[in-house]
Image (cartoon, rainbow, N blue to C red; front, side, top):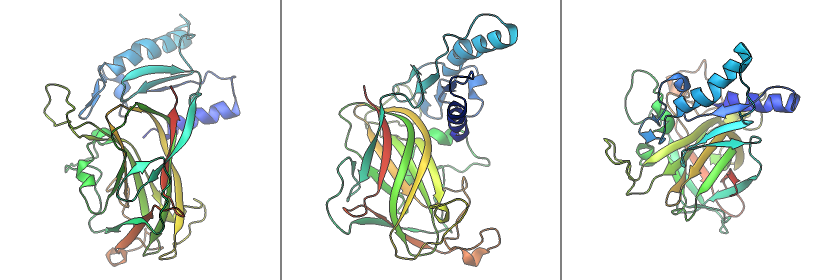
Length: 323
């Protein structure tokens, strides 16, 4: 839920560069967790330190002492103070996104691979059926309210579903640090006139990974790093929705909120693609009709193709920070 904070910071920098006390701090928290006494974990994922306590002592107290009590200074607060999940370290940057961050394309591959080589074959795609009567849930368990822990939840339950596509790299030979806005660049064709597209960026832990004493099996854990949804009718414009032509290949390109995460050596980068994320997003009837006035009979199945060939190469674009 961090879209607004990133974009607000960037807007102030663009409109009033260097003239405002405008800095950004990002920790690995649910909303308000920075005010809690610990911040050492979220869900099953541990961060190796009390991140909320560090923020309070090093950012919050100096900030309020200076601006409210006119004591001390804020010279030591960096332009961007970011907790890099994965490596679990606070990092200071002179700007955000940091200098040295470069967009790199990772293409979906036939057979579920994910790498920098563009597919050379023709006519290749992966397909699933999206059924509004059986939407993909946002978490495996049943809850009375939306959880806070879903932001790092294990996605293995989703990767087992036939209506979720999975693309992943081999085990990484080196750390890969992603700092900035991720872009989903999909080439799709559908059997109906509308559909949603959910793209999730996932860190797959090694099979033997363990925190030591733990209740949940972390070996092979598929940690959600970031996810976002695009309602297909708005693929070209939020102001002017457009229907899909059934069977026609079209581009669906959209941004995911920024990432500050290191995929460690021995881990894998995974992308999951699906067409529902219930109930975080309302179900799409998968027809180009008014969702607010339709009824049960208007919700229909859609066959979704994600293309990955030489002509129509679906991909994600990762802003990777060089060492």
